[in-house]
Image (tube, rainbow, N blue to C red; front, side, top):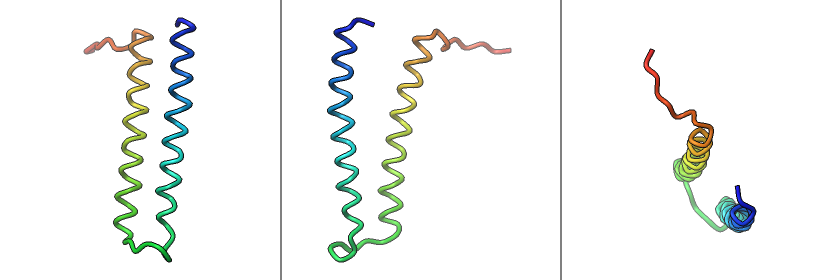
Length: 77
């Protein structure tokens, strides 16, 4: 990997992950029952949406790593 590509990845990852973490913290602020009214199913939907998106992100990285390692070949035995 070229140094320039690595630098750009690190720069963008730092910005985007920091922004995502801050957004998640803000979602957590919604837990204050003195300010908000919500149901258990509302929370379950929020948590599920976040978990699903993290799983999709992980899958994209896993696929990229497999392609890089040349492990995407299908073999029917």
